[in-house]
Image 1 (cartoon, rainbow, N blue to C red):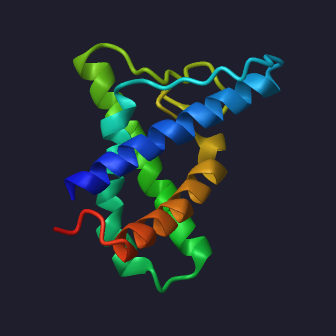
Image 2: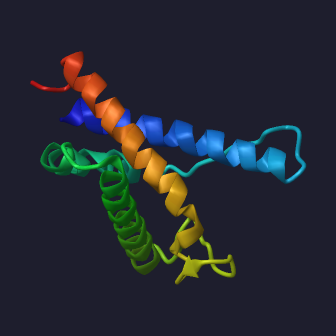
Length: 136
């Protein structure tokens, strides 16, 4: 389980760096500068909590599964952002003033992204299980 937590944390970091680098290009910066925060490693590692949920919903239609993941990811993002804000005084991904922001902690316009990331998680999890990674 610890190994899968680490894999999810590392994968989340990589996806976030790719996403922010791609957005820097869209903003006109050809250097493709991407970034993340150290706080994000354990937060992305929390994808381990999606494993038992996936096992219960894997027979459902992909639209329903993706919707469930989107809601769960938004909930985790909001909760962890709120916890950071109320413990260290800052949420590293402050969305205050952005369109579709909820209390500066989540952005509803990211729903399609989280939908896809949730479905990607399924493939990653299935691959880890097939490779027998982190099962002992």
